[in-house]
Length: 336
Image 1 (cartoon, rainbow, N blue to C red):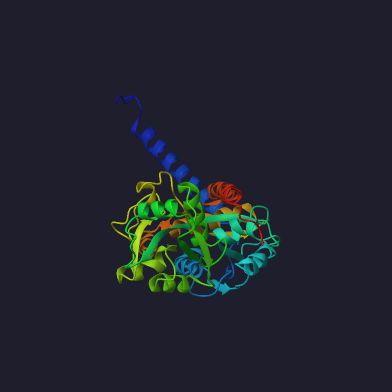
Image 2: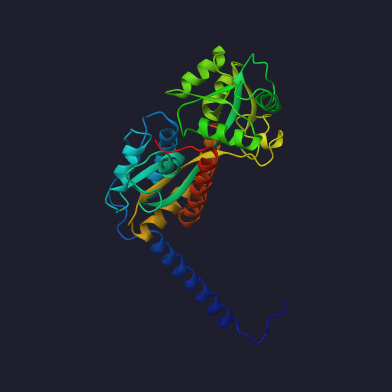
């Protein structure tokens, strides 16, 4: 590298001082832009539109403590359950858009309800500002521990040879169990009977008991039964293997190329929230999700940590809604 030796030491020192001052100024400006003046100055309420202990509630509580530390204010979890998450989601859609009432939403509340319910009382795009995508959660295809089926191909061969002879359970129309099974049938050109239950606990009990043939269960629920050999895992709906189920291959690698299905969870604010507050919250939540501790805990639960925020999360959301619309039309799932 060539240096101009004619520059005096004094000039070089002044140049370095100028660079240092400019750097400090830009850092200060960035902080000022990143954190809106006076926000937050009181506790933030995070609405979970489901009962305590469920998947959305679990992740909301997982991120609430580290997020509270970053924001310098308490994060208060409030459960407002009812009608497939609609009650709590409506509440946030109508809340004051000041950054103090947020929604812990998911695929159901902010994507599929739009197609499965004739009048949910809100629009998933127009009524919310996406802040941060927390995680994606694939399912695992399971059968009874003593089932005669030992592979994904066993299921496909039986379903093709005897259409409708196999049944699968779900916790309801539009659930992850149901939607993954519909995609599986669509891509494999098979037909199975759909048996609905009030909850996944009953689904798993009837598979173990032999009343059901299979289901696509969410991984955190399935893992204990798989480890105890009450259920047998045939394949996961994720693109890659899941750390929570080592050795269980993706269904896409087991004769169904391109098969991939995951549901997701994310944080939203009401439409009209000031952009500087939305950007700040999205940034802080994303940073929490990407910490090694939170990533590890999510992976242990059988989830894929994400962290995309604001506009990038919004792009993901629009693509996801379009994907569900296409699937529902293909398999003729209509609103109740």
